[in-house]
Image (tube, rainbow, N blue to C red; front, side):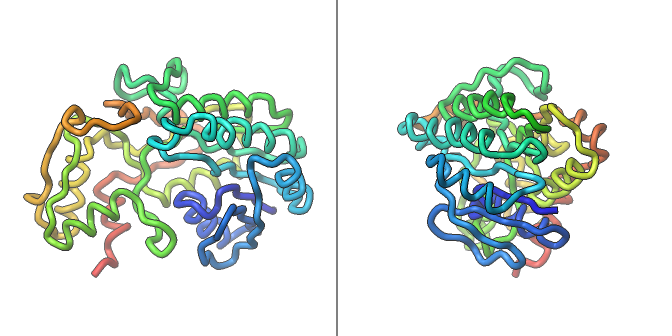
Length: 293
């Protein structure tokens, strides 16, 4: 089985490539440079160029394509909307057009497609993104629907953990700052269902084995937490000082891109369909930081 991972040089893609390369033949795409992930064959691909995408797909002949590549910076997507559309929507369109029908497409989407009007979103809740990043990812999902082969869409929650030699995530920055005894400001009124990076590979592998088709799944952890609550658990589990956490309101820190207050995901559907059980935040932090000095 050959797995093509687009955007394998990013945080999600690199960690996913690392885990899947233990079992499968993995080809990772990159634009400018790639991390030293063992066991991965690398190929340069420009997601905005039809010929580039087509050539990579034809040369790789993938059994499974995991589409991670995206413009995922919410601030840049807000200020450079046309660029985000070109990468997120049009790039997905080019990939869908290039893949053979017998390839299984796993498209990585985001919690940001929801409208933040409630808690514990279900896949059946109508989308209504509040920022341009979410809008472009919803447009990308609509391109996936045109793929004639089998596909699933994974709407991913906020990720943490992962291998620090590839890229750092938000929890790594919190840990590093508190490790140095520096205070860290975290929102007390912005809620997510944080997902340990290791659970993504478990879900993707389970999807490849059970092969659900033409389904949309939420993929989040079991805990609905504010970033401040997440930081407190991180401090407790790593022996750092929770007093360094400064709890602030979203309203006190305006950003260019609107920040959804609550994007907590109900992931019962994927747990039932694929038989997976994502880690609690407390257990995920223990695993992610157990070897940290």
